[in-house]
Length: 206
Image (cartoon, rainbow, N blue to C red):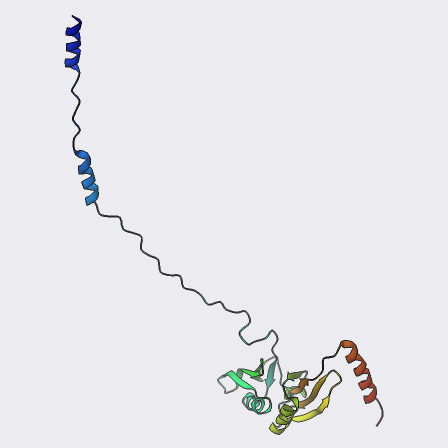
């Protein structure tokens, strides 16, 4: 009896299913699918040139001269001080609205006197309110060169008490220029002592 029951139970148990070959088909299907496209390469970033807040060759302070006859003044400053015109912009009436002159390692800006402008030329003012100082390798040579170009002597060349070879000229447009070459390094105390002696000498009558 027990053996018959076991035989029936065995007959009712379903036979194990043989695995089908579906997995390889799935692999084949995956292989036939189009490959995913790689993202397009982005264009290289354009490097922007770093702009200097103070242009090359310029300094933090630059004199800006106003004259009557800027074109003639540019030519005079070339002859007198060796100025190089780095660029000028003429206006519609032929006047210079802006020019940049280089003397040594420094710049001077220049323009014609403009009607309605706030700045006046020395001719309009009847004099100038400042002196442009030049430090140069050979003050005597440039002084003589400036006088030959048409500048007037306003102070002859001298050995100044502060240690410079020094003199001053006034150009035909009314601007005053001091010209110097440094000769001695002095302390403030030494300059003060020499200055007091120079003032005492100047104050003597005759």
